[in-house]
Image (tube, rainbow, N blue to C red; front, side, top):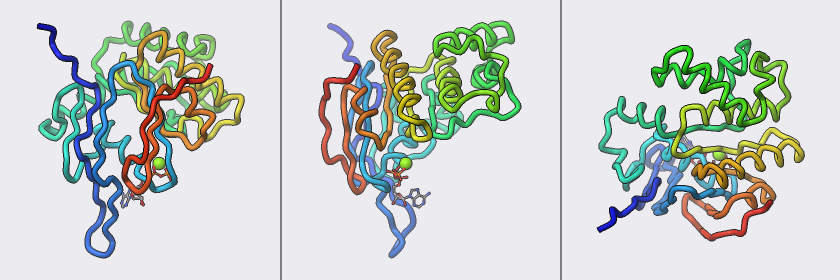
Amino acid sequence: MATPVSPVIEFRDVARVYGSGAAEVRALDGVSLTVEKGEFVAVMGPSGSGKSTAMNIMGCLDRPSSGHYLFDGVEVGGLTRDQRALLRRHYLGFIFQGYNLLARTTALQNVELPLIYKGLGRAERKAAALAALDKVGLADRAHHDPSQLSGGQQQRVAIARALATGPQVVLADEPTGNLDTRRSVEIMDLLQALNRKDGLTIVMVTHEEDMAEYASRLIWMVDGQIQSDRRITGAG
Ligand SMILES: Nc1ncnc2c1ncn2[C@@H]1O[C@H](COP(=O)(O)OP(=O)(O)OP(=O)(O)O)[C@@H](O)[C@H]1O
Ligand SMILES: [Mg+2]
């Protein structure tokens, strides 16, 4: 009998409550969803609807107040703090709106950073980081620091950093939020190619419908709940 494949991400009735009493905010209010390997999911919804809260839980940066989060079939709530950190380092890649690159540090060193935490030796690290920079078309900028790169290039370095460790899932919270349309399209083309060619699983928050169209599925959140969840054709 074939082994059943678990979804890479599964929320079972997840709630995340901040504060208490009159100040209580239900940032997530009973969210259930599954993401299969190889999906490219866009998450949209008004400000404050719980998108980043959901991403933080998916990224093991935060935990549900109630309900269950399973990563690749493993209940994250049952892991120790150290195990969660390992899960983050080995299985997850993060891309943020503000790039979050270290200043006065070359593109290569920025991409090497997560590999240091992963325990790779120096030569292996450099080779993996260069390969990742090559993948995002920036091999020739390896020795530039962020101040010498455009916004779009900085975001590509951040994508290389997210890819360098060979993650199962990349989580991107408004990756094109700081970019003009042309640079945004470049970033989306890149993410879409990584999804289609390499089968990378991507969950991406965006406020822009044009960017969401690059995904293959669109989840719409309102008031901490999923209002709609549907397949889309995917641009490009
Ligand atoms: N650390 C916190 N403490 C208290 N409330 C919080 C905290 N983080 C988020 N919230 C509240 O939880 C709700 C969901 O926030 P979240 O950041 O997930 O929204 P979002 O959908 O990502 O919004 P945006 O589109 O503006 O980024 C909001 O009402 C927010 O004020
Ligand atoms: Mg947010």
